[in-house]
Amino acid sequence: PGCFLSGPFAASFLTSLCIPFLVVSVILIWHAMARSLVRSAFAASRALPTMDNSSVLNSIGMSLQGLYIGICVTSFSVFSCYDSGPRNERVLSSYPWVVCWDPVHRAVVPVAILAILGCVCGFPAFLCWLVRLPPLPHG
Picture 1: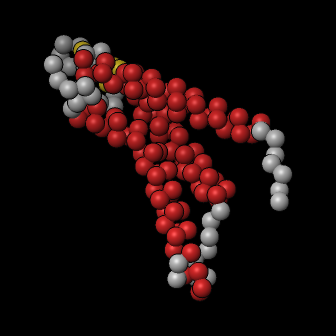
Picture 2 (picture 1 turned 90 degrees about the vertical axis):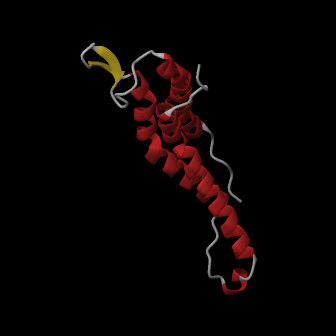
């Protein structure tokens, strides 16, 4: 018995799914650093423009929309198998060294299902919910 989600297949798959979280983290860290710099010595010279919260949320949303197709492809790649080799085994299209439904593959399937529900279905549902919200009053 090996560790849960161990090996190059699981590491590669999970790393691909973590990219949106890394992008959002970088945007938030950049925003926090820029705000602290604007409040410091640069404030007098007005060298750095400030970004309000809506601009940061817009940047996050645009980044996630750009990464959406890649996350969809990665999430569904766990279920794309084909016959290969002399024994006619079913292997993954994206990871031909992984035999479909062996223990290594089965360990990653729940993560793929969560990614499909959370990212592939959840992100568009969240955007539809945002569109349906009434506009906020200005001022």
